[in-house]
Length: 204
Image (tube, rainbow, N blue to C red; front, side):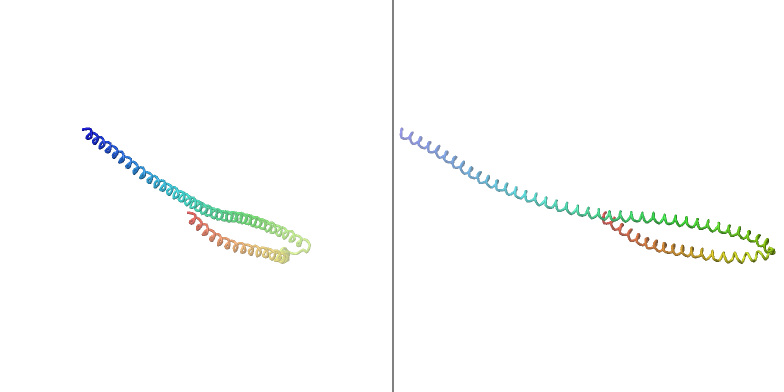
């Protein structure tokens, strides 16, 4: 009887010990697995962090490269616009100078016309005066005095007309030169306008 109880007790203890050993073994295995999993997770985390750092560095380098390219393009466009502004300013100044030359030419023409009108009036007054003087001094008939005066006036008129013709020829030459310069300027402006259009298209 006592021996049977002891056997049962030993069996029970053996079962308890076996169960405890199984539990401890299972716990050890689980702990070992968790350790490996944690180590693998830590490795994966480190790898992910390294990749993230590489991505950030690559993105930063690309951003710096793009920024440098954009700044270079903006600088190129600024220089191009500055050249166009300088060209337009020069064109405005040339137009102002041309307007001043036209005004000066008009003033000279008006002055010349006034001088011619005055000269004609003076010639006519002188003719009348000399005609009266010739009639009085030479006792010429009015017809004779007029013929003598006309001959003298003709000589003076020829000299004056020769001078006027020289002035007109000089003005014609000046106008021809101005016209040639204008044609050249217009050709340059057309080329510049084409360049401005190309710059505008490339800018867009």
